[in-house]
Image 1: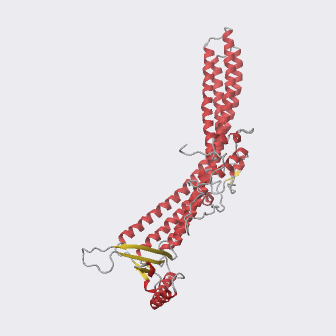
Image 2 (image 1 turned 30 degrees about the horizontal axis):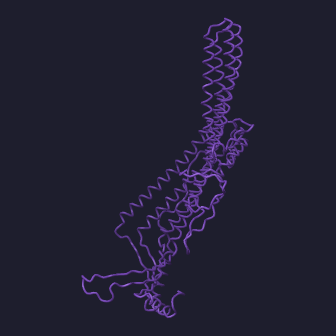
Image 3 (image 1 turned 60 degrees about the vertical axis):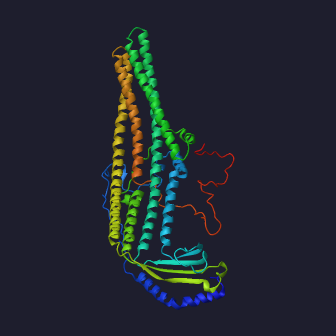
Length: 531
């Protein structure tokens, strides 16, 4: 009011003081009703009680105990520096992290929007209009056309008597927590994907090595058959069989190399780079399929409710859905508001400072949707149905979590037994190749026996390598099922940037999608869709 002349302030103050006591009485009554209200609309949420098994089905197996698993950095148990480096790059540069983080930022901003509805708002309203009245509808008195100038402010406040606005804030709070758990679930998924693709890469490397070693063995057999053919001791069919077996093995190598390249490219994408950026990390001296120590803890099934981000996110989504029931139910009750307008209106802009130009209106108001009860009740049913869907999703998340852990545990144990059997088969096949070749040289067996034993040796060696890789994959799946990799600390959000407003127009020149981004250094490499 400082910009109003003293005479104008005195005149408007005297006019306002007369009915102000009525407004004060009404305001006190509404606030008293709001503050002393014994119950808020909607349902008071409580975390559902979920029954889970006391122990895992395979808890009697060796290498398994009920100690809490070390899940925050489970990949360190594989003791592989390259894997650690790839996961660190993923944490720093993967775009999915930024997407999930900005969803948390969005949820917190939405909460701010909901919270702001609890407070009064003040709006400045200035206008100018020129009006010409029709002379065909009757005589026109006064100037025609006329100019109307208006300068003023309006204020409004919806008093949250029945708690609908508070329920919307409650829903927004739950949505924030759900978005944080979704962010942590991205951590779990991406770290597991990096480990799985790294294991695939090392598995393909070892399978290629095994194939090349068997190519050497089969080449020796081909040379042996060729020398015996040249000596007239065997028929040509021995040579053709040896060559067919050799080329079949060679044909597998390009296929494995393609799969190796695909795993490398996927690792590059997960780490936020291009294929050449991971070459130096993968080309280390220690090239082996990583496996964790045999002894490990997996905790108890009840721990999943605390460690799995997707389970916690489902519970928070349920809380948000329950709060929305109260938001819908609040429409059944009247809404009380306090509104006011103070303006200067005149036909001549020079008369704006005059006290006679002052106009005002203020007072309480009530809005009650009397003939929409059917629509509102159906909207409440919609929210209740969505809450039950969220409850079902929460129960499903718990069941799926237990299922995934049990399946991963079974995979670890059964694949270990399979690998032990394959290693025994490889040892026997290796000995058989030596015996059969010696007997073939002495003319005691035909060359088909040599081909068969070499094929069995290569098949078992290849299966043994794949089985070792599968064990490592099962361990990763187990840690993923346990919610490993989720950081339970507070999610650190980026500092909010200053937004436009409060004077001259300001632009977001720091956004990567803005045309006003500051120039990059001359040596920086960039590309656009237009390129």
